Image 1: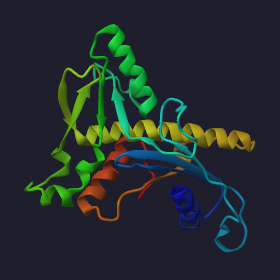
Image 2: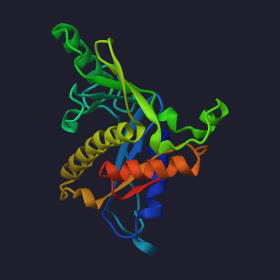
Image 3: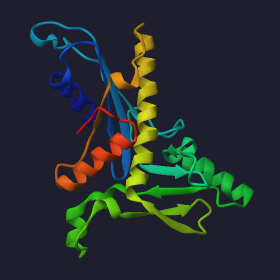
Amino acid sequence: ERLRTFLGSYVDFITDRPPAHIVAIDFGTTRSALAWTIADEAAGPRGRPVSVEVECKYASSNPEPKLFASDKADTVLVIDEGLTDTSKDAIGPAVFLDRLEQAQEQLTKGGWYATNFKMLLDVKSLAAAGMRDINVENLQCTLRSLDGTATRTMLLLEVITRYLRVAGNLGYLEICKAAERRRMRAPERSDVTWVITVPAIWTDQSRMFMRKDAFDAGLNQAQR
């Protein structure tokens, strides 16, 4: 509901001519969600929309039978065992549990997963814990194998970029479906304005890091 309210109020600031296609990623430390809207009715000065309908959904590659659509899903990234095929990246608890079960049945590592990685961008907390000369671009994130037998590291920059790429693809599919339901032309990705929520307490370094991640994830008109 917080994301729905935020996105509804945000439209006024970025819409100068309809239609405006907006996708927001509420990228949370523990849980995440998506929201999207199409503002296509103009009236009054600056062509601001009369009203907008904001839709929300948990951020997950697979259906989440235990969640309502308006809920948030656990922030988890699942990566293929070979690490290089980003097309197999997925997010959310359902796909995590599915691949975990596959790994147990096949007696293989089955891939890797990462959780709680966003908290590594809380530079103030890291500094308070004793870390010095923090450069977020060099921070490493721990990946764990799905079978629980191994760990390895990956640059935090790549982990968050891969998460945002999947979330962005899901959000883009949803706004295309919304356009189809309204008998509108599906937007090009370049038509979409992307919004990514970040904590107010973050440092400028962390905010700029998130902008770079969003750009690398293909969210080239990302706003924060």
